[in-house]
Length: 198
Image (cartoon, rainbow, N blue to C red; front, side):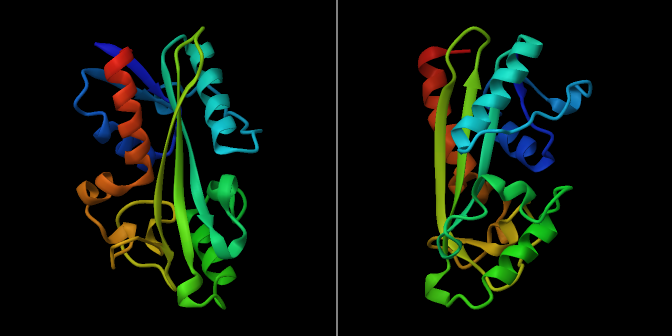
């Protein structure tokens, strides 16, 4: 069985990616399996740069193929914020609830028809000694006026995908895994995987 590392300690992301790669005969490990690895500093200014930094650092340390994800929420009315700072938008340590509160506070005076936003996910796949391969996905939608739903993680409770009336956090896992930004990026990656293999 081939081993691949998910360069993450975000339980929600790990669960989502494992489910979406379930059809492959892979041993999927995460950074929870390698507690000795320190936090990787994300010094890039784009999702692509940060995903590549994580993938290459972990891949070269462990000498395994690595998938790293950098993702976030881009809100039109906030000039693209929180963007690459999505995970730590309300400060350290990362706190989904506080991040959501900060966004809702900043969006208080924004009209319903101007609350457009999108989730972005960039996956970087790295095999030691080779070039990084990128795939990306987007999920268009809008920001709510309050949190709704208990599923998901991150900004899911305040994001309604386009064409839906429920927030991401009100959708079942299988529904989210069809439309999510991460699902789109992984679908792209799986097309590449079928052609090139691990």
